[in-house]
Length: 200
Image (cartoon, rainbow, N blue to C red; front, side, top):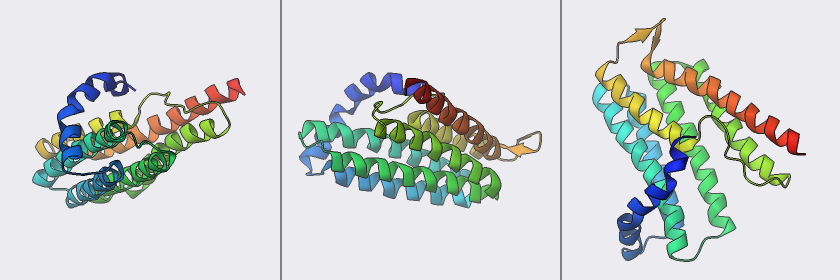
């Protein structure tokens, strides 16, 4: 979870964006919903699986991640952070993950890899909240967090745009990304489970 460690720096960079969102009257929930729209658009770009659309998809993925930071910062600025807002944010994040990875997989026709990648991502997130549900606090541990995933997707999209036909052992750039998410996602989920099991 490399990028999560940079959150203090990101929070400082967010200030002008949070100021703008607050000035134009946006609420944290509206920013969350906007982030889902951006994720759906990114998935559409990846679904087309053409160089220029990979670039568009990547830029939209980065925008989705940035909006995901803004909604929380805006809630703190407006002093309206709530459990309902937190729930909405987590639900939207999961739908965003599903659509983005689904778009990547459908674009290259790797549905089995897409399924494994999505289940790895969802199990990672599920274990985080389930551990909290049994009273151990929210778990963010593991190899790759959401910020890392979005960064990797964005980078992979640019690489696919530049070297779309490149393959390693029969796998293209997007296929390799899906394999990575499938393997690391399930490993991260197991890490969280094992750590929590030891604490119970």
